[in-house]
Image (tube, rainbow, N blue to C red; front, side):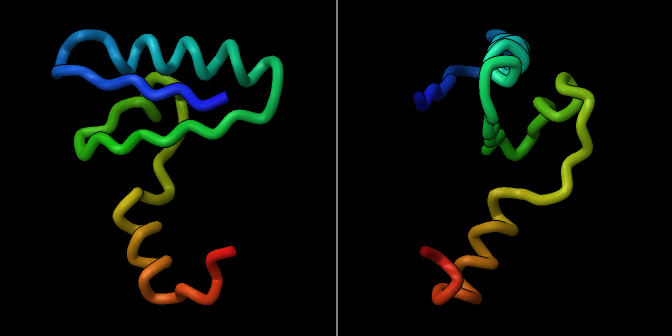
Length: 68
């Protein structure tokens, strides 16, 4: 299952996303990606950011042989 939430700022995307992530993670392993430069999804989930989409992209560019 792939779910994407998009829209203008201030419409509740992070709130809806965090609730959906919590519900889905009770059923199975869940990957959440917050590609917003002003990301606050981690705050709503009570998690600490350890990497960014930009950092992942840089790693892929630097080490393309590591990508399956």
